[in-house]
Amino acid sequence: MSDAPPVSDDALDGDALDEAVHRVERELGRLFARIRVGWREAAATVHPDLQPLGYQVLAAIVSGHVTTAGELIERLQTDKSAVSRQVRQLTELGLVDSIRDPDDRRARRLVATELATERVTAARAAYEGRLAERLRRWSAEDLDRVADLLDELGR
Image (cartoon, rainbow, N blue to C red; front, side, top):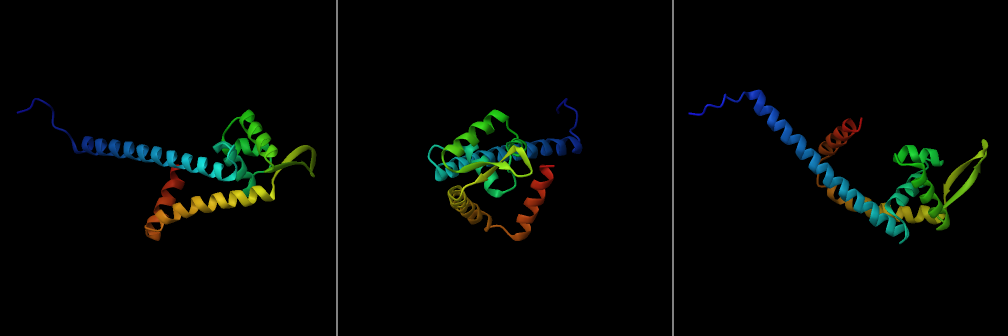
């Protein structure tokens, strides 16, 4: 006979929950690592000298969701100097133009060039093709559930 107190069902549930949380953390870590590899590959597709952050900046500009350095900083949750370096490189590579904002002559808008749009589209197509190949193995219901759970996690 053991002198240890009996383990309650609540404690067992807590242990199972802790292990499940750790598993989710591990799997998210693996997923994030794979995403970083994808960004690195996409950046190289756009230009061999482009860094993953530069690709993220460019993709955000190409999407049309951001058009100023401030919006990039907010969207990518990074610092001003990092965004400035990336925008400068993208401009030097002929991928981004900086133009005066017609509504505020002091402000600048960032616009993707045609070359940038073509290259980001090609990089996205390759990545999305690989992702779609994996996701198409799942049912629509499973995909909807994963999307809902990720949305909830991101809040």
